Length: 108
Image (tube, rainbow, N blue to C red; front, top):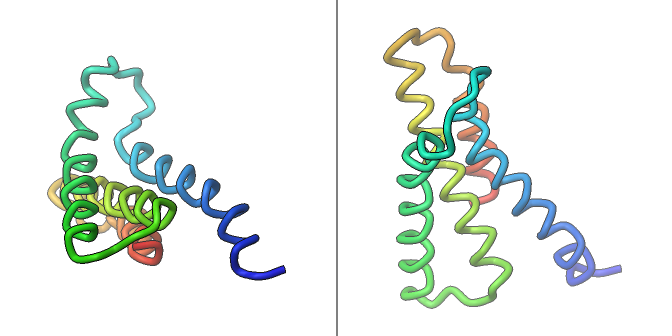
């Protein structure tokens, strides 16, 4: 089995994992209306879209790679936002957000 097999099998899993990684930091233990989730996730989606558009303009090709790059940028952005929120409240509680930033960077 070669790289095409692993790309075909693992790429959808990685995109789903990064999608959850991008949304999960803003999900609290309390129920929030969908409007609040959208307000929190729109900056991450915007940065992912702009970054992917820049990558395409610079010559990046391949739908799978671009979707993975978009998901990684969106997850990275949402976790940086969450890191900043947590750091303002309590600097010592930023470990989880920092670990998620590193995970998203690994895929970007």
